[in-house]
Image: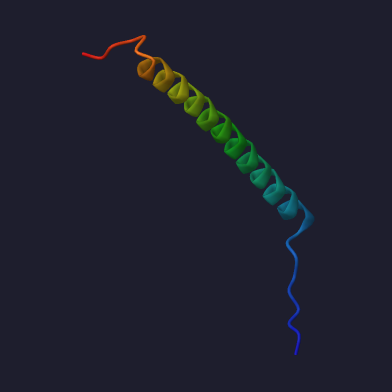
Length: 56
């Protein structure tokens, strides 16, 4: 026997879509920030390993 499920109202579907869109935008921003920090870390490691900066 198949069960019938009601869909949320159009207004509720729209609200859910906006929330999910905001979450996607936040994830994208965090991924960009993560990638930037990875680049900074890589650059710092290159400078340190090349001996251009000495840590005391």
